[in-house]
Image 1 (cartoon, rainbow, N blue to C red):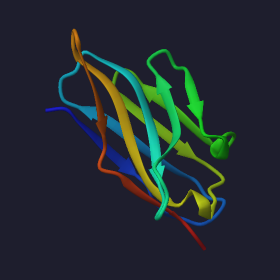
Image 2: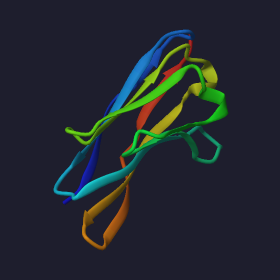
Image 3: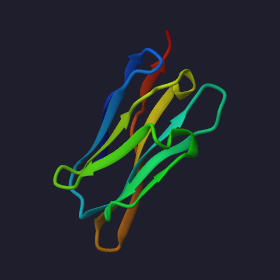
Image 4: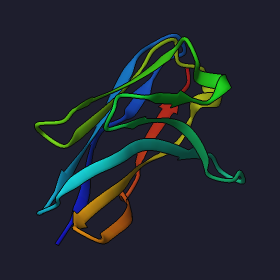
Length: 120
């Protein structure tokens, strides 16, 4: 059974840094795209950053220059380094993965979410 296992997150003061990671657990053929979304209370889930298996990256405008997404292809893991955090970054962060399980079968998965709280 394929799952996304998230770690990291927590509480940090404004201006601080946190790193979240997400690992694909289970048997797959290939990771196509992995990324992070977030959802703040009363708001819609939004893309934060994503990275393809060719290392092409996309960032939300609000996090450009502060967040960095990277991956370890050997570990099927994606990392989100978050620097210069602001209170408005407070949200539940969800990992997302577009995976090829076997030839001809491609599926989308979500992690369980990890809370990031930025406050003084």
